[in-house]
Length: 169
Image (cartoon, rainbow, N blue to C red; front, side, top):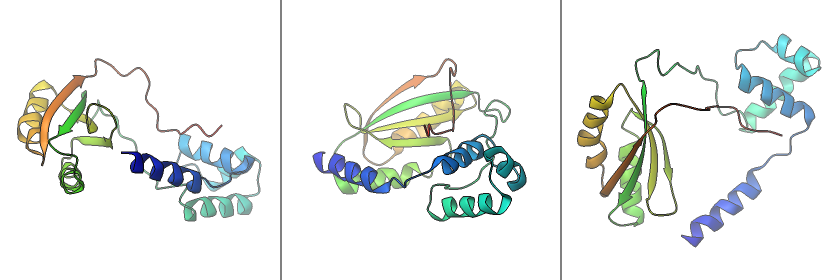
């Protein structure tokens, strides 16, 4: 496990691009509204339109802007339930981890999946329409993933805070 943590520390140390005040302002505004026009964005961050566009393109090419998406209302599309699922695997071998990770990507209800330290190997955030839908997912999907030895689930009662905006300081 130490080699994973060491790799992560090296990755995070090497991956941070130096952002100036304008870059941070641009990124903050784009996180709030990815469809903002360049004219509006330039006015908001107090840059010329051409300078603003150059900066946005540079942020995209450097990978700071991963992609632009539409965030849907989970409730409006009928997926009112959020469940956090801890998964323990039988063995922590690389082949077992890879097989699990490949298979979990094929479950559309899994919104996020994290390899974890601690008692469980993975933490998943899944969305479902109701508890019957979760029972189906549990029985037909989660427990059938490769290498799974234990599944522990917690149902979210309500969302207190949720954001897609990273804190840029």
